[in-house]
Amino acid sequence: MGGLESERTVTGYAARDTSGHLSPYTYKLRNKGPEDVILRVIYCGICSADLVQMYNELGMSVYPMVPGHEVAGVVTEIGSEVKKFKVGDHVGVGRIVGSCRSCRHCNESMEQYCSKRIWTFSDVNHDGTPTQGGFASSMVVDQMFVVRIPASLPLEQAAPLLCAGVTVYSPMKHFGMTEPGKKCGILGLGGVGHMGVKIAKAFGLHVTVISSSDKKKEEALEVLGADDYIVSKDAEKMQEAAESLDYIMDTIPVAHPLEPYLALLKTNGKLVMLGVVTEPLHFVSPLLILGRRSIVGSFIGSMEETQETLDFCAEKKVSSMVEVVSLDYINTAIERLVNNDVRYRFVVDVAGSNLDK
Image (cartoon, rainbow, N blue to C red):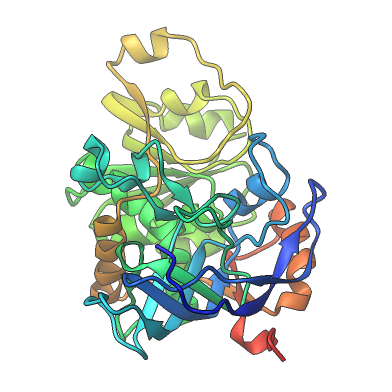
């Protein structure tokens, strides 16, 4: 909640309209309250969900908008009632920065499903001020929605874990996809997909990457550690793989057919939808009912799961593959992301961009 201290001015990169073009924008941070943490943003990942908001694909965007929700930084100030963090701590902020704290979801540590969740950007704080994200020099965030980044995780590596990482970790834990030897398919090998491969392997799963071309085959097998690779346009290989997978993590963020992938699932198999697709998806029901298969969805993870993800990746030495860029390159990076031209996550060096000078 906001306090009575004087406001402070910061600079970020904001979209002003649905073109999504980002340019420097100066604005005031909300006042620090007793449970707030002020952090200096060091790195921030670029996620396809940022683009959904920047282009107003869901019809709910508020401009001017400073995107960015894979935020890794350092605590510079804390409120009087903050007990979890101290100045100098390495911390992270993900997709949400608030919730009602009283509904069933909040009481059961599932804040991400609270109907009154507050998005990290393009939303409104409890005190009526607009939320702005991590493509900026500083943020003020309630301590409940801040997580600790283990010392062994470099901040640029930790940033993608705050969305891409927990997005695959949470459903793996929830749906019991952690039994070593089980066969897991990763559909789409982008920012979320590459973390899916790495985290699934860390759980001991047999991992098959499913992609539309063989362009990433060598990297998937030799660098990321996948066990198998299927080109979805290869009808013969798809037929050979029929009914072979226990789970598929569908990370594709654009419209695509589901039937070819449902056919790869064993009886009782699950297709877990993770990508934000704003168009209807289609399938015929016999592919579900004749194999007792299911299509389920999952959205990021709770704050507890986000912390678990960071700790798990630190323990298992799971790292993300990133390309670090400066803020003045961000529009080019976004164009490349749209064209799937990144291996596998852009991370912006916010601190190195000297925004407040």
